[in-house]
Length: 397
Ligand SMILES: [Zn+2]
View 1 (spheres, rainbow, N blue to C red):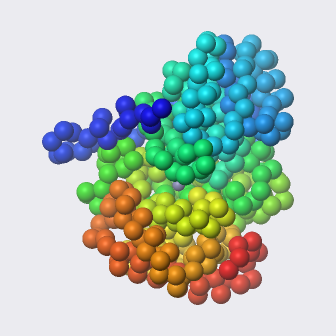
View 2 (cartoon, protein in one colour; view 1 turned 30 degrees about the vertical axis):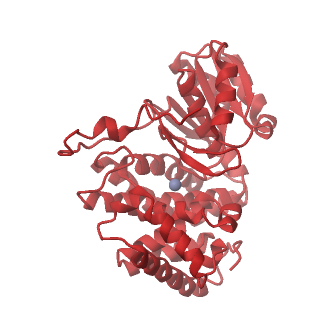
View 3 (cartoon, rainbow, N blue to C red; view 1 turned 60 degrees about the horizontal axis):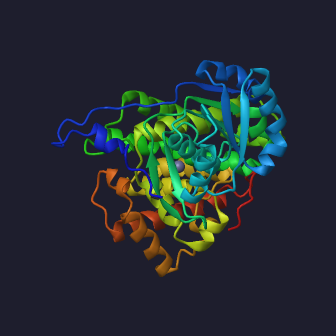
């Protein structure tokens, strides 16, 4: 059971001589978002010409959404086979579902859940050669729209990324379901989404930078990233308040689109840089991995990236926003002791091993990354003190 390397986009799009790398933009075929849209998924699936669908969903998710989901498919004349997702996007779990579905004449996989269930659904659909339909139940990550899965061991340790030849055929985001989830998930998604613009901007300005697709960014992906950040600055606080009270309003709709569609398209076709490089390396600290969400780590990584770029005013603006909505702005808020030299060594060494961190335009070494991280931490301490009356203070300091 190996990670499939058959569709590494860099090997497809990059010219063999390394010259003249093209611009590439990819996206799901259709994106539908609104309050209550999961109840209409059967009708949307008429566009994909489905007769028999596999549904990948957790046991809890089936209890909450199964009746509506299966009822909608039945009403559209679509048979369904339910597979219960065990919680980890591991090759073991993926192969179990793919083998069970192999003889079922399935013509699409509908993955309903958080980022790991969504990524597992893409991997299962690829193995049984069927299109994948994504119905995220959280707006905490940018997995739903991309043509890749992040894979882990059954114990939850990151093992790699698998790329697919096709993006999802349909993404259906029910904002009523997202609004019913814990506010922390939406806020974490804002941390992941805010990085999109700053990373895409670095890749656009650095002619040597390559996107996740191994290609050059398009103006479209840069515009999407910029609108994503603008939406968060303008409506992020109101959207967090909406989720805290379980209501769907215009601000929530805007931020769910930013977290899911804009962030998803922006990261995949616009490129990653130091924000995600740091975020990935924070997972080497056990207390951080155990206690924090991906977007919370990306938030701290974004501040460190801006300090690396010497954009202190922009870092202060972003940190003020993060402190207000309840995202980490200093290392203590990720359970990392700023004076712990061994922990900082682990983080910067890890970050230097992440390929896309070299999309940054400057030379990088351990001392430079450490200065960026500590600079962001100190700025965050200062901003956090001034934002002491912020309405959302769930993170311990
Ligand atoms: Zn991310």
